[in-house]
Amino acid sequence: MIRRHLISLAALSTCALLAPAAMAQGKDIKIAHIYSKTGPLEAYGKQTQTGLMMGLSYATGGTMEVAGRNIVVIEKDDQGKPDLGKNLLAAAYGDDKVDLAVGPTASPVALAMLPVAEEYKKILLVEPAVADSITGDKWNKYIFRTGRNSSQDAIANAVAVDKEGVSIVTMAQDSAFGRDGVKAFKEALKKSRLVHEEYLPPATTDFTAGAQRMIDKLKGLPGRKIIFIIWAGGNPFKIADMDLKRYGIEIATGGNILPAMVAYKQFPGMEGAAYYYFGMPKNPVNDAMVASHYQQFKTPPDFFTAGGFSSAMALVTALKKTNGDTNTNKLISTLEGMSFDTPKGKMTFRKEDHQAMQSMYHFKIKIDPAFAWGVPELIREIKPEEMNVPIRNKR
Image (tube, rainbow, N blue to C red; front, side, top):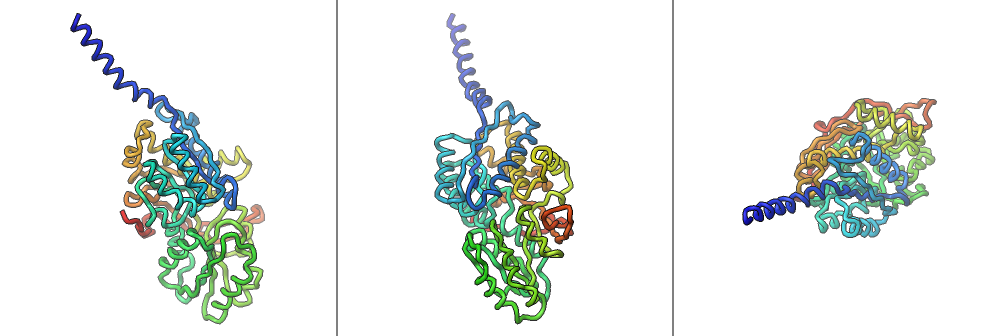
């Protein structure tokens, strides 16, 4: 009798131990996606959302589940406002009980959100906000980034314009994105000379005064003269209306979304470096994304679609490795140093600052009547190991 009672107690104890694991196995994996659904960077945000959902579907073989757990994405619109983004992330972690978060679109919003991830001890996978400080001096261990950072942009673009006898002026938004971008670009230049930095309000539409200041800095100089643009949203290429050719001044910039690259048709032969263009990478993941996007939308995937897709690939790869376990510390140890496939090829999270090391693409603009935009023709892929991307955090 006593022996039978002890066996029953032992069985109950075993069940009690197994129950939480079984319950966790069946619970949804909840992911908050906080992005600019509206606001100045709405186009970027919507592409990221499209890419994230396509990537989750692709990575899970269309099931939207890992290890028997459904993946549920909760969307939140930060409108490009730092305070709102910060509050939305706190609500996602605290009220919605999400396992982790992805986003945001704008760097100032990301910087406001970083301390919230640390406070709640939950992962924030940054995509696509760019500022170096996100994985630099403002970083904490809960932050990972699949998006490229300002240094990766800068080093890749320096490949295109950093030549002897070249004088450069930068034009950037007066924001974390713009200032971090110029700082990194300046550090990457080894041969050319940076003669002026022009910062303008992010919402600038009249570039006349800024353009005149830049012309005055360059017009009397010998050799090749370039205005290098670091800008998100809007149409900074209006500076071309100031007849820059009269002064022998060229424009250079990095890649962008397809609607913005319509303006690139004015600059055949312009060189730069791109994070992504659908025709550049040659791998099965990109082939699948391009085919799926054409099927769903009758258009090619864009710049930030690839980023959203990459973030999904990173998450599902990690969750498969943990067998669906969303414990934050387990995810951090899994993600650190982890390599994963993306539309851009293989990416790897650097252990020191959790920045994804990735390829960039040196291009030259050509005009093709079949496309509404200036087509970035690939000169060569710049591999991660070619870029000495500084580690800027204080880990």
